[in-house]
Length: 92
Image (tube, rainbow, N blue to C red; front, side, top):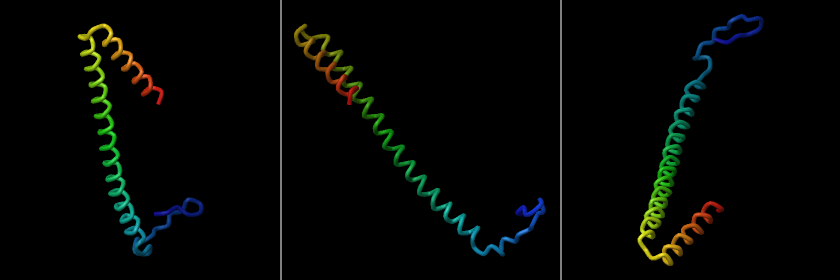
């Protein structure tokens, strides 16, 4: 149904429209399938990024914990390197 002048209703038969409703539904179906694949791929990329960041953070934490058992000179050097690395990552 469509509204026309002065609020009157006009009945439209779907056959009068030809194949336009079918065309719209086919285009929407194709678009939704493509959008789903795109979203799924981007979600996968995001999960890989999160895993990489967690792995790097765990490795830095382990290095920091292991450095506590070294001599003061080596411990200071390693902690300074970790500090420089983290500040560079933060800056970039």
